[in-house]
Image (cartoon, rainbow, N blue to C red; front, side, top):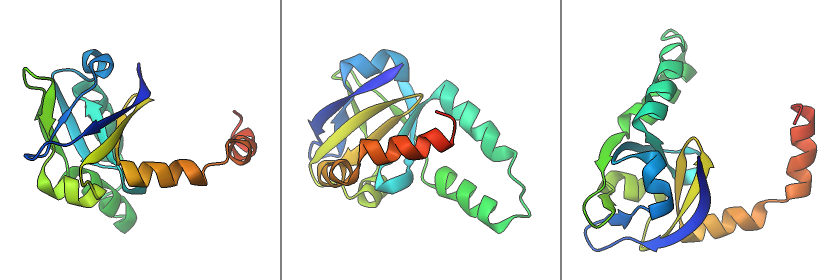
Length: 141
């Protein structure tokens, strides 16, 4: 299970250290793509395959479905962890997520979210656990 919050910095080549506690579950090779809310998503190969299968069920005749699928597939790259525990994030994904230097890596059970530190702090400030809890109650949680 992918859990926890970790702060790291990109090196000058755009590489990021994968926290040791997440490496075992994400695997040596994994997929990074554009995520929602301005972050990046990272999936193990198994989880990416599951996600990919769900996207394949969307009707190609639906414009929103095509756009949604395109969003995730066009930005996707396969990453591999090197001997120092780092992986390279492509420049287009770094630009999409607004990465400068400091990032936050967040375990989200079946995926990892990678945020610019600034966006993560803003997101955290905007979250009211009480308000969200009320909305989740309507979903049966």
